[in-house]
Each structure stands twice: as C-alpha cells, then as structure tokens.
Image 1 (cartoon, rainbow, N blue to C red):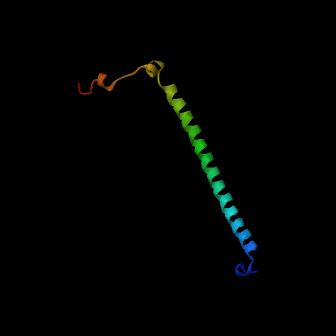
Image 2: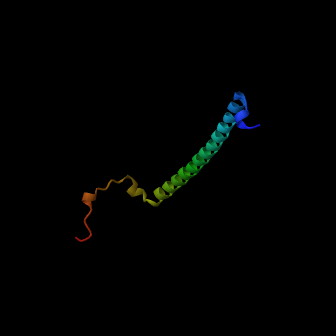
Image 3: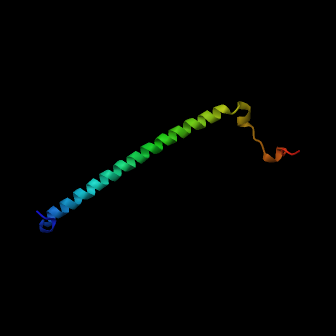
Length: 74
C-alpha cells in the first residue's frame, strides 16, 4: 500500500517509528561520545598524577615568583 493511500493512523505510526529509530541512533551516538570523554578524563587524571609524582616534594608547596628569578643573561 502506498503512503499516500495509507490512513492517517498508519501514517502517524510510520512517522513515529521513523522518529524513534532516529532518536535511538542519536542516543547511541551520544552514549559513545560520553564513553570516549570519560576515557579521556580518566587518562588525563592518570597523567596529572604521574606529573605530580615527578615534582619533588619540596617544590610542591613552595611558591616562587618570577620576579625572584634572575634572567639568564645576568
């Protein structure tokens, strides 16, 4: 049966099925995006921990001003 000859209820049902399929596809894409972002956040967190472990304990709490630094040409 052609879409033009379908009764209004069948047409509405078909339109809803199409919208549902598109919504499910979009939800799957969003879930994949959120999953990839969470993986990236976790990786960056591990990198921050690794970088903090590289900094000596004495330098972590010490505040240094750039004004206290002597330029290399002096």
